[in-house]
Length: 246
Image 1: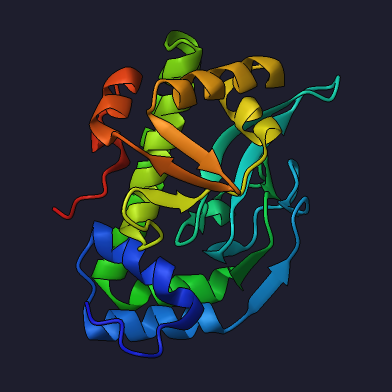
Image 2: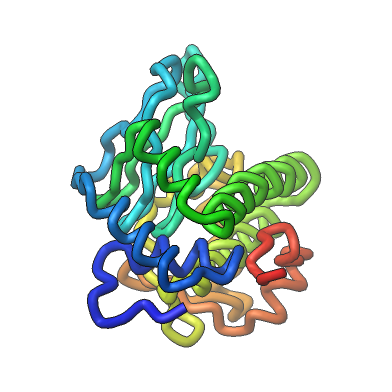
């Protein structure tokens, strides 16, 4: 895939889909045109989708970080997944009557929004595009299975280390890692809500990862000092991310 000099905001989407299926130049052009049809921006702490909304639109995250989350009646939040640049928020969601979770922004985000007819035209353009989008959906399901294991069986240090390893791998494929470092804009509350820990316990866990020399976290930038050691601590195997082309 040749992105060319005019990839723009859609660069991450093209890289992510190309990691699932090799895109032709025609496929790249079709995705680029679809993504550019309607580009929106919003700040941090905003909901793009609320639980119970009608399932109508497909959103491509072009820059920034968002998350999927569920709220309990007493106000406690569980983050059930991170949405990173290049991810598509629920392809084929329009086949359901309503959404069963919320999607909120963690940073300022730029995203593209497609109505069902436009999205279906894109899927029909090329079988490779359709396959890449199906792979994106299946990968999300695989990630949810791994998160269930993370919350149910790993201890605090293993959970947090696993999330960091996952973020590193997912950001790498869209070109957002510099060596062993990447932007880490989420708050400790966000990371605690994703790992099922209190903020106090999360803070102690981060201190343990730092003191062991596994990570450096400074000015919202995270460096993995020894990826092999961090992966071993997390029992991390990236196969569930399905980032390698078949």
